[in-house]
Length: 65
Image (cartoon, rainbow, N blue to C red; front, side):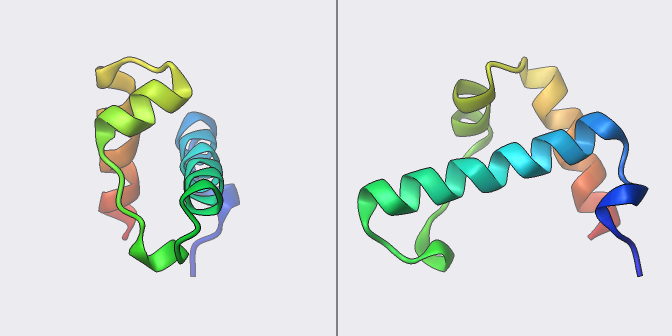
């Protein structure tokens, strides 16, 4: 079983930032977490990361399932 410690630092940071994005948006929209969807653009806007950075670290997360 993998843990957050197994992730590269920036990949872990993106995962934690994505979680914060979901928490903030679901609270604002008053919807359940599982009903919220976000895009890479949403992550870029929220994190101020480049498309390359977001795409790279999201792909790492996908690869690790």
